[in-house]
Amino acid sequence: MTRPRNVTVRVRLPRKWVRYLKALDAHDAADVGRVLEQIADHAFQGVIRPGAWERGWVCRVFGEAWLERMEPDPEVGHHERPRRRRAGARRSED
Image (cartoon, rainbow, N blue to C red):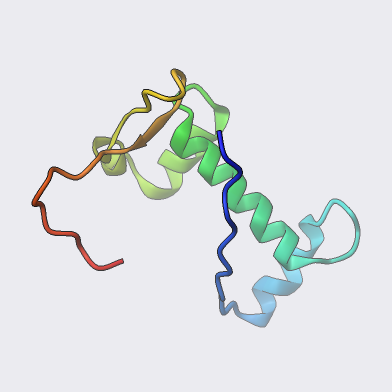
């Protein structure tokens, strides 16, 4: 498996949210970026791993409709991935 490339995402949050989220930084550095990275990692684990504790958390946050857009990942037996588009299917704008 190849190492994933990182993508920078710019997020605007209310100051109050940032102040509260800083409390979650396990390194006491009040690094909201690190907190958001950890939240994203847990969400990612919940999306790809059907048996993970994070799956229930993701379903509570986003509902369960997204599960219909997933399929087993043939490269990693215990993971899922977004369904592959059929050849010729239009790609929606991201």
